[in-house]
Amino acid sequence: MKTATSCEPAVTIALAVSLATPAVAQWQLAPLATRAEFRGLSVVDGTVAWASGTHGTVARTTDGGATWTLRGVPAADSLDLRSIVGLGADVAVTASAGPAEAGQARIFRTTDGGASWSAVYATDRKGVFLDALAFWDSRHGIAQSDPAHVAQLADSIASARNFPA
Image (cartoon, rainbow, N blue to C red; front, side, top):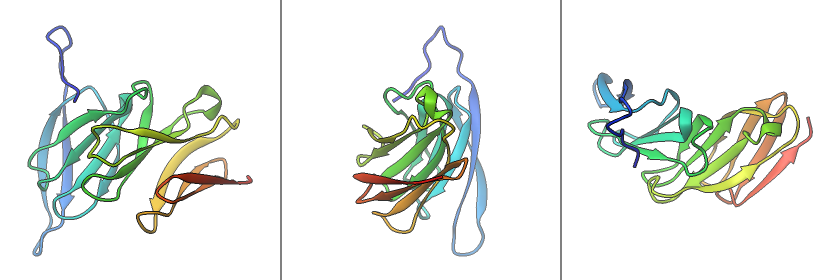
């Protein structure tokens, strides 16, 4: 879990999430002590949501946004995690954005609520810049990139197949 040290001032980022309620969605500010800027958001249901951001930071709530847990993806502290898909309270997939030839086009997966992460996809193909993830069920999805690069993700990211540009 990431925490600020006494010599490193903490910056509070307000993360606003609208979680569905039977009547009307309500917004609440949730201050998080982090230097990360959040880029990705995935709401799983009325209690679980995931957010991803700079410095390899991921935040997760399992209580409708009342509290958030900050986690770091190992070996991703220099990466911008721009897209995240929550597949449940404990399972999520996140992608980093940046030039593939600089080692920045990667996808990570957790199955334990973000306590640990596995690198499940990477490419060094020149020009690839991962933009978005989408899943049509818990085992099958796609990663989209500039320019026109798509990877099919299958078996909960156990395998990936690149489509030609």
